[in-house]
Image (cartoon, rainbow, N blue to C red):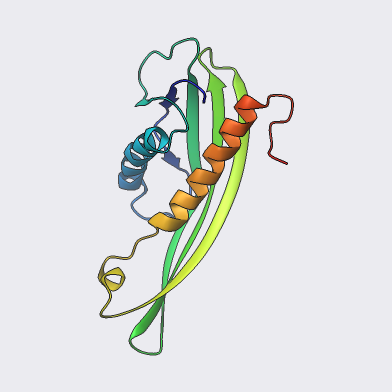
Length: 150
């Protein structure tokens, strides 16, 4: 397992994303916790800070951050989440080691009586994308001659 990781504040560069500024802060904190809890790195911190020589700097950018609600059948809705993001991994000196991209789309049907109707969430889709990018990054750091999984 790679050593520690430092996380640049997450950016949502999608100009059509609603609430991007608030979501960026929440995503940064959530990803910081997820990195450590899932065991991708031994520890994670949010920059600013001083990465040690054996630590990495991770930069996430969401260039598509779309949440759409489509009504159908009167009392039903379909929530569609579409995300695409990149993850750049640099060493402590700033040299880029990896640049990965990914995307995910998920739709979920719900009705007016379900909690998701009032509080729609896209956490499952976002987590799937973040997990995929982190898994590719750890693989690439552990296999520098073959940075993408077979």
